[in-house]
Length: 279
Image (tube, rainbow, N blue to C red; front, side, top):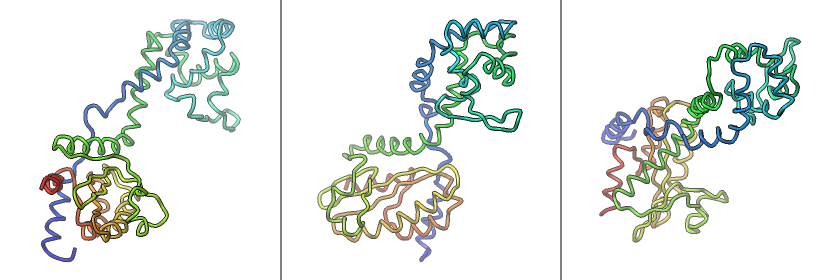
């Protein structure tokens, strides 16, 4: 930092960073979970026939004669969706797609035995495969939380704007603003928010990083480059709203950006930006 005041402000900024921006509604997307289960529920209900069967080989062959397509969803019983195209190592050392085990009764029996599903089904550790897969889908959906964090940040900022009566537009391309096109070059930039006030257009990016990674340095470097280009055009200002304890791992690069970008806020001091908009 170039002066004591800036250094003090940045130190305060860093202490304000939040551990998470996840709300209770972000943890599981039950609409998606229900949709995924419903799409295969008929096949799962047919596979329920296998529950409690002591002669699993015979039961598999009986069900195969009735509807071989029922076995196409076996992968989800070990938390693998059909589209994932996961592979497993065979006894001879070769790799084989999991879905290739669902093509014949013998392969299906081998799959059930080696994954432990035979024992689970025979001993009735589950009572209904539709309910069981609902739980599996909930678990798989938790892996999507990281992606939802970015969307959640946009929703949080939008809610702050809404609560303060701030009009805005979301997902706006830079091509709408020919005045800044020469400065930005040929690449079209999409801004998360645009707020227009008499004589000023605020082009806003928002993000949240709860963990470290190379992406943070890249983001700070990119915005440090783009902000002066936008701010040099009269009537335009670049605003960056970011948060998350992941920034502690990229403190130096964020500090450089803090010095270059006058309008850099987190979820705590965003109130200062709101006050400016209300003036």
